Length: 336
Ligand code: TYM
Image 1 (cartoon, rainbow, N blue to C red):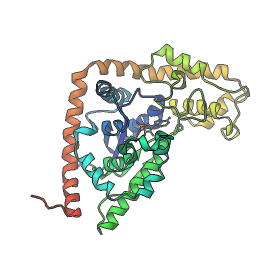
Image 2 (tube, rainbow, N blue to C red):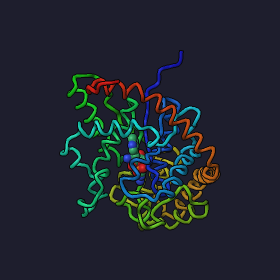
Image 3 (cartoon, rainbow, N blue to C red):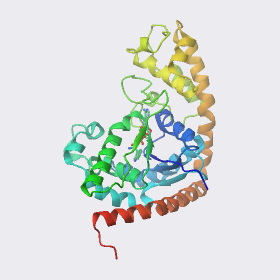
Image 4 (cartoon, protein in one colour):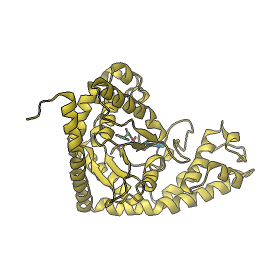
């Protein structure tokens, strides 16, 4: 008998390049977790189109994200890797959750406010109900744990609220209340140009982020150019609380080398950033270089990637079908 494993679900949007934030905040942790949990990793193309995407670019980015997951160490023989649109249950359960979630809950979502900006009236309805789809992604498989970066925390709280309200509305104990797994020393990787802004695919400044498509020279150059301050590195991370750029680089160093931020402070205590940055550039290149090269190789192997996504979708459909059928039954949809 196989040992019972709990189930994780997580996803990445295929919009633009994967960044060091996606890698350290999410994918690197998934690689470690896949051994312990039954794992489902999704390229969330339905989420991507909440903001208009060029169709050809969307197809490319979908393959690239899948390639990035595999190049980082996700094992497609052990885990399910697929793209969301290929399992219609996501959209279907999201509709049911649109009817469970309350307007007031969605009105509080800070990501919608950030993304819609001042032009709320012109944002897509999809962007507004985005978190309902995210809850559907997870609960369609009754996943128990969701490894994400810190920016997704509020969405996961909403997924918990939806699960609880569904259970109480229908008097069942059906959906699990999911646990976020926000792990590692780089839970929120910040821009290399502004330590108060999240590192993001959509930042207009290329130097603000490291992309998993950057070559070794570009990675090293971006680290060298990263903003710091003029004070020396302190012996503890607490002493660097109000130095966001410096703290960010320390966290990145710690996460890439599987140490704590405290360890790094002790090692560089009292030094300026020159030697630290040189070491960080070398470390980044040694960890990310092989990943970016493998990702490029895999992205060119379209048939291989498409095959993995196809077989992942089939497995995902099979896992979710009985759960969705049960949901229909609970809600009262007459099944013919
Ligand atoms: P997305 O595509 O923006 O990001 C994918 C993952 O990367 C993490 N991340 C970061 N972590 C630390 N620092 C950063 N600067 C950084 N930037 C991104 C994110 O936290 C995320 O874990 N809504 C999700 C995708 C999604 C999902 C889901 C996740 C859809 N359905 C179900 C979990 C479960 C998103 O837009 O992630």
